[in-house]
Image (cartoon, rainbow, N blue to C red; front, side, top):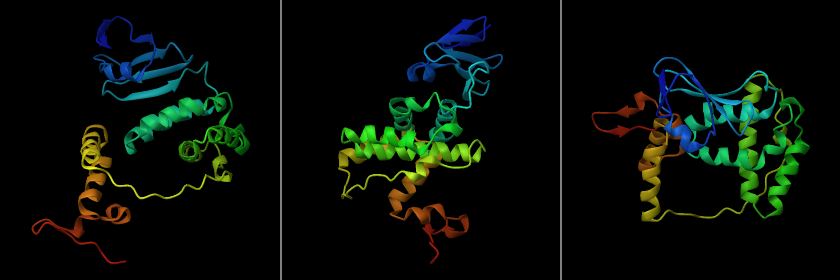
Amino acid sequence: MQLIYGIIMESITLTLKLTDKLIRKIKIPTERTSTIKDKIEPGLQLRISLTGRKTWSFEKKFRKEGIKELCYKYIEEYAKIYTIYWQKDTARIHNYAKPLFLKKISDIKSNDIEQIFNDISKDGKYATANQFLITLSSIFNKAIKLELIDRNPTLKIDKHKMQARERRLSYDEMSKFLHVLCREATPLIRDFALLALYTGARKSNVLEMEWDNIDFKRKIWHIPKN
């Protein structure tokens, strides 16, 4: 027996409705890897290892070479680790990508994606349509690295041109931003954002920073000239 989701169970496989709230409350198993199957989405399951690592997958009998599994893989193994707003990526996938879920990754064409892009745009949600396209593009790039496909179908679709606007955070907004950044972001994203914010350095400078550039005794960061 072991403790899963706050209760002692003899079985290490459960069937529950996998909500964000439930996933956050799941306890780390004490004996061996646990599996929770989703009540809503047939075949979808979440595995929790003894180290607390959570991995999404589909049971073999449900598995197709589809984009649905890849979307979950992208969220769990990339977006949650390297982006702050991964919840928005998740919401965009759930809200708009469902028409693609029944297709194999290799069968998805630019026209399939463009139809969804246009449907979002009809409601005047141009920024949302652009962000959806960016999210999908990242997912398809992941598929290319996994050698599932050899092309990114989103590249043939032109994003809406958005009018640039100058935007500054108020003191209250900045306070909320820092609170969320320090509480929700991964250490990598948090440190990068704070360093860029407090120094005013360009993103490229922060990305190219090396230990040799820092004088710890004098507390000075020397940025090399290009």
